[in-house]
Amino acid sequence: MNCEIITIGDELLIGQVVDTNSAWMARKLNESGISITRITTVQDQTGKIIEAVDQARRDADIVLMTGGLGPTRDDLTKEALCTYFNSALKEDPQIVESLTAYFTSRGRELTETNRKQAEVPVKCTPIYNNHGTAPGMWFEDQGQIFVSMPGVPYEMMAMMEDYIIPEVNKRFSLPRVFHSTLLTVGVGESYLSDLIRSWELSLPEFIKLAYLPSLGSVRLRLSCYDSDPQRENLILKETGVLAEIVKPYLFTKGDISPEVVIGKMLRERHQTLAVAESCTGGFISHQVTSVPGCSEYYIGSSVSYDNEVKTRFLGVDVKVIEEKGAVSEEVAVAMAKGVKEKLGSTWAISTTGIAGPGGGTAEKPVGTVWIGIAGPDLAYAKMFRFGSNRLRNIQNASLFAFNELRKSMDGIRD
Image 1: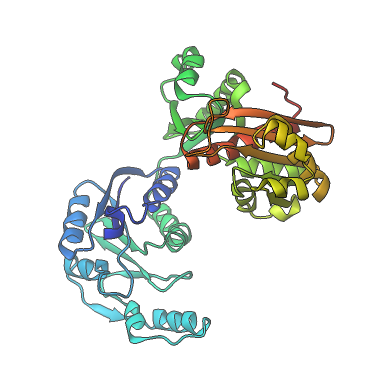
Image 2 (image 1 turned 180 degrees about the horizontal axis):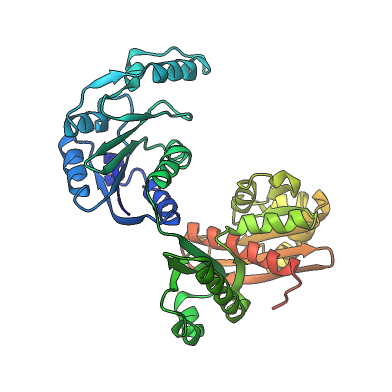
């Protein structure tokens, strides 16, 4: 089963909006055993949309489109699909009712412009939108499926999960796909490749290994397409062997984000976390609080950017800052201990560093970050040097802070 994704919008082509929809859809479709043949982005032009759809149907069984379904004149997807499938528009009473309720709940009236969103091609099956105003459209033509969805990510995701993927699974017998993933931190892709080379060469042919590098981490994914329980058990066995080989760098098994892993560890142990951030400016706290249910273990944080906040709120000794500098082991330890004591948490993370692009010295270049950890029976800090890019330094500091906390919670000492 082959699928092509078409994203529609000038804002994507000029870089004003990043296309996250395609990556999310591709991942979900792959989990269902559907192969992506191509991802295309086109302008908000009727002719270009029609051309892209016609090209896609030559190679794909399913064509999924996002974007161009809004109420304004530059949203042309519905018009293009009417032309392509030779269909007229018809107002759908259920969509009118849904739109009326949507605007009423927000204290607004349904305008004529918005009411036009209730018009859908006669030849399509409407996909009702429970999270927005633009309905999706499902077309079937000559054994192929064409689906148009809103470009708003959470609206598209809901349609995919609630309707489109279940409907495709009902209609087609899809191959079973199985993945097993390990997340490593603090080691490069090439070093990992050398480390696991002999193991990788011994893998059965049906197991495919993928290296998925990202900032500060590499995911190792073992996959089997057209899988069965016997093959899946073998993949899990090989995953265990691989985990032992990469153990010094292993953050977690499974395709799980670090902040989710940390939250799970804290929740299971009935422990709590506080954070004191300087150079990361609240980014660690943001990641922690992005996890639903974090109130069970996350107490709060201090974004102690200015030295006065470090001394007044966290109790860092002024003399220590004067003698060692704000970016130092001593200050990082004091910050972690200070926020732990102040907020009464089991564990605490601190960060202090030079995010850049300015402020570095020969002794402490841009990218120098001290990460502090304080726990029930320990308090320490470790220095990292990440690079010259400010955003990457903040993101790396957050990842490595989670990694240090994980190791401390598990009693791992470098």
